[in-house]
Length: 315
Image (cartoon, rainbow, N blue to C red; front, side):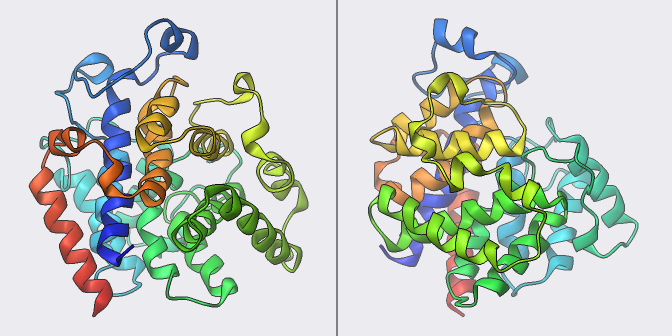
């Protein structure tokens, strides 16, 4: 697919998944099994109209704009601050959802700290707040053949809000898989390729093996073979990565993948946004239900952003 189609697939994939999940956030898996999500609806948990996306998409859009003039974490930080302070890139002019770790990181950014060291570094700062917004970076990584440099770029962008190695590893694994999906149009082969590449790279690094061990189900086992009872929609970054890969690998369309993510319950918008980014890249924008895309808040602004992002990447 062309660069523009890949961007459209990935970005709309994130935003549509996010909007599908917003009304169901905080409901448990048992609740979702009784009344599963089947389409785009509104209201619910945050009482927002249909097509409303959350901080997941807001920060994804901010990252895209921050990357338009090259790789510059200060430019990205300015966008994050504008979102938090001035409701920039919000669906309806207010910030209605933000994680504690992200809020604290933006506070440090506003104080003038180096953006790459603003993120939470303790074990309790391993929510999915960097994983949920990281997808646009894949389009810069695609041009970088040095895997060490790719890892450092991912580390920097994650660490703006989530600096613990566990969060960095989730983002790195996710984006290396996204790269493989764009290159290898077989999601299972792409998964095996990613595991081979990532395991070989991590073996050369002086990293805490305990932290790598948290991703055993993803990197050593086949995550798609895990029973659904062991797949969680919680906001813990390890669970979010496992859930997104599981939903993509165990379904046969974009629609099925993101609905499976929502129906895991708990952090429904974010699980579906993370899943949706991969599913959108893999299946392409044409396979995302058109009515869902057109229902998105600020649909025209998102399309304009995608076009500007493509032009910036090409230049």
